[in-house]
Amino acid sequence: MGQNGSLGNVVVDGQGFTLYRFDKDTPNPSRSNCTGQCAVTWPPVLTKNTISFRNLNANALGAIQRPDGTQQVTLGGWPLYRYSQDQVPGQATGQGVGGTWFAAAPNGSKAGS
Image 1: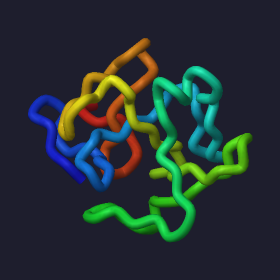
Image 2: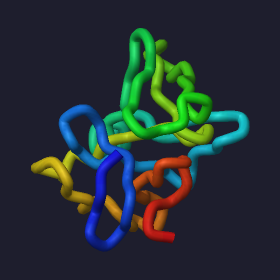
Image 3: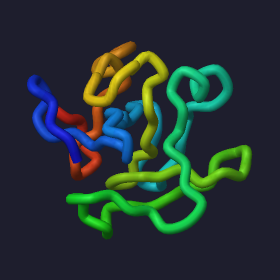
């Protein structure tokens, strides 16, 4: 978990990059609707083994299978992504993009709301 000055607590990866959720995905059942070029701009957070994040409820973490067979990390049912335009740890330039992308809060909801 990380801290963003305007958004409060946000979920970050092991390198400190902000993780995002997409309003066109679904949390129940967990499903990603970001494939093709979307997944190039918004790379999914993938896992092969155990999912581990510090300061997050382990029961809220999960994974779904993507169409290509990879496993994508979910939080509160929402698939997680990075934003290719975030250049340094702590940036959250993907916040609000297209009115559908938002930094993930520690429970999987939208950060800053």
